Amino acid sequence: MPRLSEVIAALDALWPPERAEQWDAVGTVCGDPQAEVRRVLFAVDPVQEVAEEAVELGADLLVTHHPLYLRGTTTVAADTFKGRVVHTLIKADIALHVAHTNADTADPGVSDALAGALDLRITGPLVPDASDPQGRRGLGRICVLDHPETLREFAARAAARLPHTAQGVRIAGDPEAVIRTVAVSGGSGDSLFSQVRAAGVDAFLTADLRHHPVSEARETSPLALVDAAHFATEWPWCEQAAAQLDALSERHGWGLRTHVSHKVTDPWTAHAASPRTPSRHDYSGAPN
Image 1 (cartoon, rainbow, N blue to C red):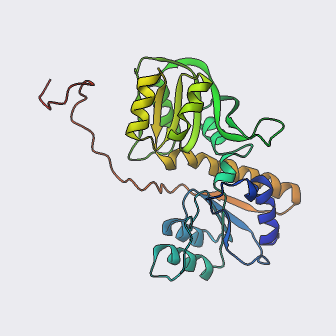
Image 2 (tube, rainbow, N blue to C red; image 1 turned 90 degrees about the vertical axis):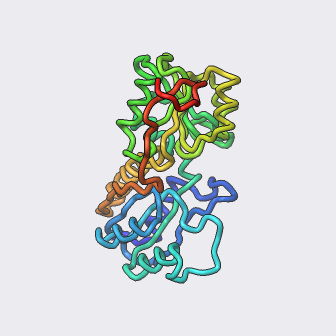
Image 3 (cartoon, helix red, strand yellow; image 1 turned 60 degrees about the vertical axis):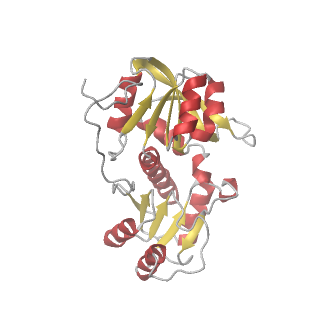
């Protein structure tokens, strides 16, 4: 069986840590480099529920997309939730490794997995990585639908293909507008509106869209917006990443067993829909 250091080296080749944003916290959080690795669990969030799943599974390595200590820490005491995660993993001899923004811009990366989940044909990155001579790395992806469909139909496709969350999928734009081209970006994407408009696509699928950027985008262009839960847009990467490690394991003869967590760790737990759908300018609350 491979040592943890060997598996981490393979993961770092897929998602080089030097390509992470400067503010990010990627890499190995805990784990003995000399420990053997047999089972690997992939998940979006390093929360207690996922740590306990790793223990129950008998995993030796947990790989998550989101960092545990993004803003640093001065303690790993178990009376904090993050410290409890570390204690749970270390007691069970489970290593934790993070691939965040270095996985976002990889080839393939988080947005490739998102596009794949929706059966979209990728034509290139939304924000190309200037250091990539092949022009395949970068943030987000520009995609083409095999057949045009309405914004309502495209949003329904996203809702059906992505993990179920309390938020579901929201749209901004005419539900009957015809969609042929789409930009996608896993995770928070409202900082990319200028690049999306420059790409000339019909719609933008991402997460965490805020009121003011959406309002400005809708007032200045016909761009349709599709807003899914942050967790939902990044979860497909877990399956993609597990498949990549499977291929490396087969190549090296490691015999690793990879698993993907299906626990929905989106923090929103319920959604209360309005009793009716008012028009854009109807705020009276009176019955139709």
